[in-house]
Amino acid sequence: MFRNLFSIAVLVIILFGCEQAPPSPEQIRAIKTITVAEPVNTGKRKFSGVVMATEYTQLSFEVTGNVQSVNVDIGEKVSKGQQLATLNPKDFTLDLKAATADLGKARAGVEYKLIEYKRELSIFEQGAGSQRQVDRAKYQHRVAQAAVKLTLAKVKLAKYDLSKTVLTAPYNGHIAQRMVEPYMEVQVGQAVFRVDAEGSMDVQLGVPETVVNFLSVGTAAAIKFPSTFEQSLIGEISYLGSAAGKDNLFPVKVAMHTQPEMVSPGMTAEVTLTINNEGQKQGYLIPPVAITPIVGVAQQGYVYVYQPKTSTVKKVQIKIAGGQNNMGNVYEGLNPGDVIAVAGVSFLAEGMKVKLMQEIPSPEQGE
Image 1 (spheres, rainbow, N blue to C red):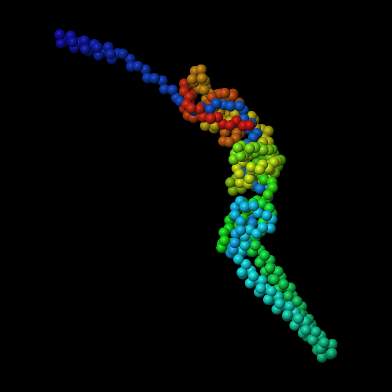
Image 2 (cartoon, rainbow, N blue to C red; image 1 turned 120 degrees about the vertical axis):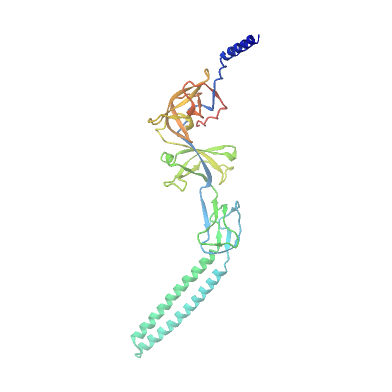
């Protein structure tokens, strides 16, 4: 009996062991995507700039000295000729007094040398002197006259230096920067104020070398001011720098056709410039991570387009020409509404089944 039970148990184990294990579920990769929007106008580029007064100046003292008073602060309105700051005039006053005293001494010397010259000339005319003595007296009189001219110039210079201890506004405007405090020692040419003139303003910005060659004075520009509820206006390039700055950007000034009351120097502006590049083709802006390059073939690659009916991806060949804002400009191979993978592209293959994660916002497709 026990032998029969053992046989039945062995048979049950064999039967269960022959059953196949249940298949493991298929692994479906999740992908991040964007949806292709309308074609971008790659002839337009956006840059960030700062509003500046068209006319402004960095003010500095023309003499070295200690600051005695500072009469204005940042943001204050000033009038032409208004006193902004002063240096201690003590040393300059002493220099003027010394130069004035030297002038008086020099003038007295001229009078004395003139008397000597006349006396030598009278003696010579009476036949008791020599021509050499007359010539020497005449020469010394002229030297004394030259000394007067020299000391007179020193007096004028001392007066000028004393007058330059007072710094005044060159025109009506506002104090944009103040870089000075009382009792500071300032050097000649050291900037102490920046004054923005009243009137017209422009936007100053920098553009890279890949763009500057397609711009010119007079190029149209659209200007927006985020701080004024997206107020926008029209302008044009009024200045185009010929040399790049330390940041490898070329300076550009955009003149505003109108001067809004709500816009002030120092505000941030967004400038859209129209690029005169006839070789640039219209297309779609795609993140570079979505593009798989074709080895040995320039300006071409692949993207994976999601197929909603089958939940798979299709490998699509594309052509690229330039771009903007760190995006590639795809002008062939895509259509509006295409959903393309933008992450984990190297792990995808033609026909692979996928599922969508939260979609990444599409790049702004121009204006």
